[in-house]
Structures are given as structure tokens and as C-alpha cells.
Image 1 (spheres, helix red, strand yellow):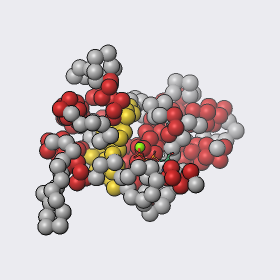
Image 2 (cartoon, rainbow, N blue to C red):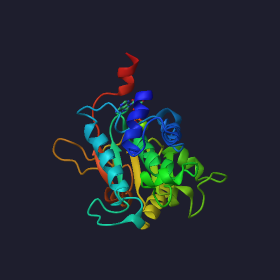
Image 3 (cartoon, rainbow, N blue to C red):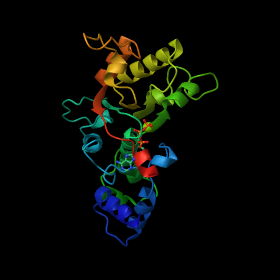
Length: 261
Ligand SMILES: Nc1ncnc2c1ncn2[C@@H]1O[C@H](COP(=O)(O)OP(=O)(O)OP(=O)(O)O)[C@@H](O)[C@H]1O
Ligand SMILES: [Mg+2]
């Protein structure tokens, strides 16, 4: 872990010399990731993750996504907007793939990297002379991470996401984990439609992970060999997702199974 922290420090705060009080202060804060991320993914790190041909393009897309945000050509912080070409402001990602291939890991690692670069660099406890060395951002990013079914619960009476403006609609970056795990009902369609539409119309990005394939989301007409497939969500939702989220398809075997052997 010490080695990982040292590599993280030189990547995120390259101006700071080891064995200085500033180094110690920052190192303590980057030892774990964003508090928004579930505990088991708090150490997910785009640059430390194991990379192979099944997930490499996903990790690289995550690195690119963060870089664009950090360099000011942001999908997230539109006050920093300079010369964005597609991907557009507000563009998120959708990570498709079977169980255990690392979708949540990548989404969490993006949240962690943004947390280190935007939030830790802005901590009040950090001396301002040191802060200027790391190019602090004008405001921290509000990153929210919801398991989709837990989010749906939070839209019911007494939950934290009731009404038109909620943390999920307003946050700078929303991560919706495990879309498609729910039993789809009219209520679910309506919640998803409202949430995505609100974020779409305010150009706020959303990162989605799902076991559904793109065809399962949109449905297919079928042909001579394959029967037609009904869409998981209505056409408006499928269109929104396609427009809002850059598509990444992960393949391969579950890393959980590999770990269990
Ligand atoms: N690139 C990676 N390097 C190291 N560990 C990884 C990597 N990708 C995934 N893992 C680990 O493998 C396990 C499965 O990954 P993850 O939970 O992200 O899969 P998933 O695709 O989201 O699966 P599900 O569809 O079941 O939600 C987790 O413990 C995760 O931390
Ligand atoms: Mg997952």
C-alpha cells in the first residue's frame, strides 16, 4: 500500500517533495478514495487496476475521462469549458458487461481519481502555498454514487431523493450502479426517465453500469435467425442513454470467480 500511495502522490501532486509536512498531509488524504464510493471499492484506482484485453479499453476510457475533466475540457465542470469537442459537456459513460468483469470497479475508480484531484486538493487544512503547486480547482465536485435499486428506494416517501431537485439530479457527477437489476414497473420507468431527463437537460454527466447489453436496452427487430427482443426500457429512455453516455462494452470472465479459486 505504501508503494501505491507513493505512486498516487507523484501522479496527483507531482510538485510536492517526499518527507515534507505537505506530503504527509496529502498522503493521508489520498490513502483511500471518495467517501461517496462503497467501502469495498474505495481503493479502486484507474492506474493501479489490473489491465487486460477485456477491460483495458474501459480503464483507458476512465483515464481519458478524468484527464479531460482535469485539463479543463470538462465533461463535468462547465465553468472550465474551453474547447470541448465531442465528447460533449455533460457526457457520461455506460459500462456494459457480464457479472464481475469490473464495471463498478472502473466507475468507482473514476470517482476516486476525481476526488483526489478535485476535493483533496481543495482541503482547507492544506497550506495555500502548497495548494498553488497542485492547481486547486475553484470548487469541489459533488460526486454521488447510487446502487440503482437503492436509489429507487430513496425516491419513495421518507427517502432522500423525493421531489424535482434532489442530490441525484443536482450533483456534478452521478454514478448509477447496476441498472437493470430491478423488477421493471411503470414506477421504475418513470423514475429513470425523470432522473435522466433532468440531468440531460442541465448537461450533467451520469456514469451507468449495467449487466444489460445495448440490444437488451433498446430491443431488436430480430431477423431470420433470431427472434425480436423486447426493450428493457421505453424508446425515450434508450435514446437518452445513448445520447448521454459514451458506450463501453466489457467482456471476459468474472474476476470474483478468479479470486475464489
Ligand atoms: N481491473 C481490476 N483490477 C483489480 N481488481 C478488479 C479489477 N476489476 C474488478 N476488480 C475486482 O473484481 C471484483 C469484481 O469487479 P466489479 O464488482 O467491478 O464487477 P462488476 O462488473 O461490477 O460485476 P456485477 O455485474 O456483478 O456488478 C471486485 O472485487 C473488484 O474490486
Ligand atoms: Mg457491479
